[in-house]
Amino acid sequence: MTTTALRKAASRRSPSRPAGPRRTAARYGVRRGLSAYGFLCGALICFALFSWYPIVREALLGFQRTNFVGRSEWVGLDNFHRVGADPAFGKAWLNTLEFTGLALLCGYVLPFVTALVLNELRHARAYLRFVVYLPVMLPPAVAVLLFKWFYDPGPGLFNQLLHLAHLPGLNWLDSTSTALLSLVIVSTWMNMGSGTLIYLAALQSVEGELYEAAELDGAGLLRRVWHVTIPQTRLILLVMLLLQVIATMQVFIEPYLLTGGGPQDATVSVVYLMYQYAFNFNSYGGGSALGLMLMLVLMVFSAAYLRLTRDDGR
Amino acid sequence: MQATAPRTLVSARALTTPRGRVIYWSVLVAVIVLFTAVFVFPLYWMATGALKSSGELARTPPTIFPRHPHPGVYREAWQRLSLGRYLLNTLVYAAGAWLLQLAVCVPAAYALSKLRPVLGRAILGMMLATLMIPPTVLLIPLYLTVRDVPLLHVNLLNTPFAIWFPAAANAFSVFLLKRFFDSIPRELLEAAAIDGASSWRILRSVVLPISRPILAVVSIFAVVSVWKDFVWPLLVLPDSDRMTVSVAISSLSNQTPENILIAALVIASVPAIAVFLLFQRHIMAGLTAGGLKG
Image (cartoon, rainbow over all chains, first blue to last red; front, side):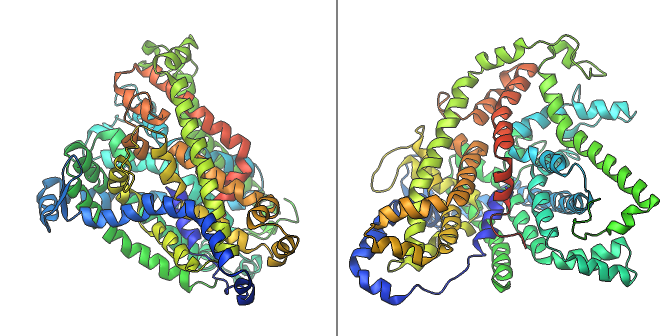
């Protein structure tokens, strides 16, 4: 999730360079233009068919009824009304928001604190970096299924550990009160490595003199974090916040593999519902309507993110 | 504590006092223990869990070391779930996506960076704009597209092309490559052009050899993202002979005994961990390749 997020971050840093010397372009003229399009044609075909066309089609699908063969008719806002009337609709949005909130609480603060601590350690750095990133490398399906086994209320690892500590076992995925939290735990475990390493890289660019000066002024450890580290890494913290919101609001694999949306719709997410509409209820229109709503919400974050990275000195 | 280390939150001076040292070492040990427990122990538990019999797996309290290791469980998982075939499938999808992505994105980025055709900026803008669309939102239209490709009217479901083509339309790779090519001095390419080299020849003999670092980053992203992907192969490769290893294991997870499933999870994570061990430096460099660093 974070790699895609990073990609987006990266794309905004595009150094817009002045156009190359006009004269060179003129000299080669048409032939060069033709050869340039020769180099571009593969990408143009791939983007046109598998990126641009689907984007346009998504916008249309939400307002159409598309049957199994792929024939479509216009139905206006019918899909939106139908999806909105689904009792799972409100639940899905609430769950997604709650998941995002909880995931930020764990998955946003934790990597930053971890990076702060790791940055102070002078030993075992390579080991700690390696280990924190290890879960990120695992295929998410493997990580999620592994945790499904840990969550087993009987002999699962987590309840065994709770028993060791003489605490009562939990029902983890089977109880409406802990199911969503269980998803957040897996998600944090398998994603926090990339955030940690990105913050770690950012921390290395904080000027040492600033800490020195703050310390001379009598600032304690926490005040140095608050008045030096956080302002100095402000931009990256904001960018990562937005990217993480965008990524976690699209949560799918965790509910799909762990709970199937249950118990009692407690873990249905918007994307999960979208998937169900399109591929279980055969309603591409309904699914696309949900997708469009999600896109609209995420666009707010994308726009904020765009402004943020545009204003930043290139 | 090395004197050369840059000043961080805590000063080197504070760490040399006896109190500072005690705190430093206890924090260090605590962090190492905690990290090992949180990130390594689950993997240890997985690898050893697969060696236990079903009876031992269900035991309370659990055994830290398998009492009677059954390495045969791994063999059984390999055969029963046909993991060899699924790993090979995944390898084919990842390798093909990687090659096609390079074949498509490298020339495109080169053209946009160095040949600068008419409308080049508009094309780049349209490519980068696709990064703003949340990928899951496009699952449905992309699925319908792959099922019936416009103009060509072919069905790519259950073929590797369903993975390869969408992977090739990767704006992030184009962006990374273009930004790198932008940094190659124009004079270098013009010198080659004066020597009579064609654009293709310049790309092959001048640009590509100096672009190795960015090619490594793009390659790793391409392979890792196909290897990790779940939803897309779940949708477009439903045929049980064509599944990726992630999809196959998850679709068989409900009808497989626990210890065999766990062994399958171990086998599926081995390639990922091996790749990480081999390319660790490139992968970590790639994380910050986007220019987020400072």
